[in-house]
Length: 417
Image (tube, rainbow, N blue to C red; front, side, top):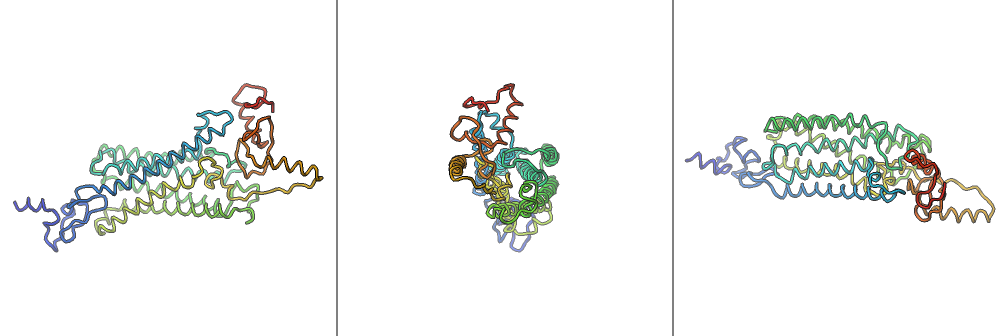
């Protein structure tokens, strides 16, 4: 009778000054202080037997918000690209680009993390525990994609980074690296079906994720420093290997450096937290519940910050050429070539014609900072009347390779080029 009463009373039945066993005090989810359970932040109740509804609702809502923002940005990006096409096609508007892939992976990662925290851990099925780890391979995919993009920016020349595109020479390396974290995730899913207690194997996978993420952070900093701190790489070829301070856009430079450092710091913090989770058996029961709760809160905030960093840096969904993360030429100020002096009448006519063209953008690249003069090759008016000669040449070459038409003419006004 007495033992049954002590079981019902739980923490309050333990005598003052007596150290309770870990599995006896507060259901193993908190500390017993003076007969009262101080629960870990995920749990609540007199004996920490129920889940903390405000915690789970708050964390899941934040991740759902990040997922919604990424989805909206992805849709805006597709619609904007569809409207820019001279021959609108939904499939061409959905073509794979770095910008779209980042939006998509952030959306999936935030959605899975939000779904994990929607249902408390004590009510989840066995397979749902893998949603916790699925966040890290998706995060590494986003970060490694940015690293590969910056690597091409640094090593390759004569590539139009102002035009939205996907990886070229680094694609195989990107795929080979991402095979590792997703293989780990598949192995963890398999282990979850064979072993019901996740704590017996989760620390091993957390350590592997931490090691892979650390590799990504190292290369993230290497290429980020070269491109955005030293301002070196193939994209500065036209300005010389060491552009002067007059050629550098100070505002874009400071924004890129702040963004680079903030994401690198948050990724390093996540590596540290994953390492601490790997070694959790050695320290978690030795520190007070206050410290464990702060550890959990900071961990979740940093995870949200890392995911939110991508939508913030990719804020301009309609004009990716204006984003420093995708187009490092934004670091370089616009170069204005001097115009040779002519007669007064000719100069006035030329000035009027150029003034009209300067108000328009090339309907192919939409790059307002490009110094190449605009031409009007057909009878079209409005936003599709002006184009760069080189942009038009490349577009015609691509069109000829996809069509059997010999006559090169405008698809809108039927004027021959």
